[in-house]
Length: 125
Image 1 (tube, one colour):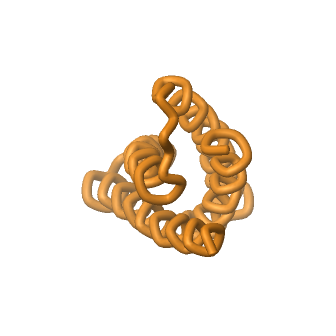
Image 2 (cartoon, helix red, strand yellow; image 1 turned 120 degrees about the vertical axis):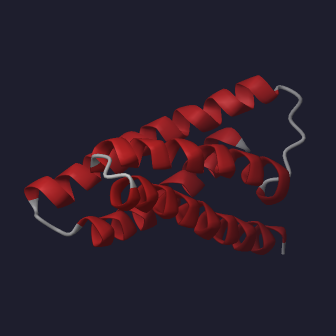
């Protein structure tokens, strides 16, 4: 039962995190005309901050007193997935010529799955 609740909350907050990521990305690319890679890095940074708070408090209900270590592990995992995110965006847009909005959606699905595995196995174990 706890795993089902945890997975539901992870998916729920993962969707919200993804929406934050996409909204920030579109804000910077479409409204401000910022390059898609820079916009992607900004979107990633703000969505990771949102994800850490929601994962710590509601998803994994962490009681870890070593918050700095936990946060460092979380951010290290997200840096890894952020590199994957940006690399896949470059591959899809510049190499495979897929549109940026559809690329963003595809990449976010991959990143959400990767982040759950890293959070469950490394950060909030």
